[in-house]
Length: 116
Length: 111
Image (tube, rainbow over all chains, first blue to last red; front, side, top):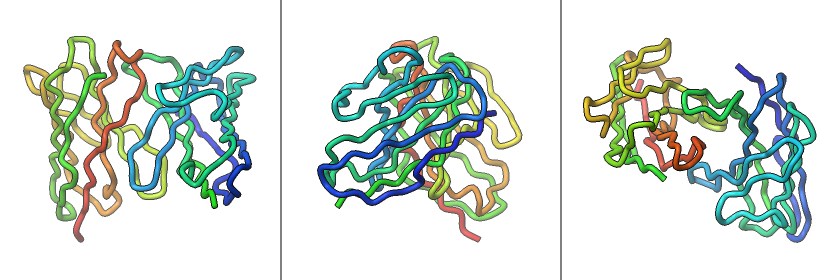
């Protein structure tokens, strides 16, 4: 199993500002992902964080809005840029040893973001 | 993306078995059936997965229909701690085996 921590756990931000969320894993993992969970909704995959290269974004998400870094196999950041109230959500990172269909994915506790 | 259909909500009594259904009529031969659950104010956690055969682990059992077009997650004795949203997910080659969440089933456990 993998233990994942996220910082901050929650934040309240002003419109137009940016917030960087950190995800730290206690072991080296191949795959890291970022999800968004809007209030009362299910999880939506934002992107796959690739070590040493640009993240792979899902339809509807762009790098300018959600820049992602992954400098090594245990750490990643997601930045929510130029925030608006619509960005108020829980942001979760998850990890998996390898992108195989019979693998288990582990999730962090999430970062609860409120944009005023 | 391979789709799943689950009831929006279900209720159960504590210490009774719970059967959570999932329909996936467009499943392909290489799709794995995964179940995750999300407890209140937590990230999702893995429950169980299977391909063709029924599976058991310490948390639950997974019963897969012979034609694989549906499956059932079985909690043998529900506890209050099992109250959560349960997601049935197909990990498909078409989507590079990414976890794509649907709306899930909210399970309420009555004491």
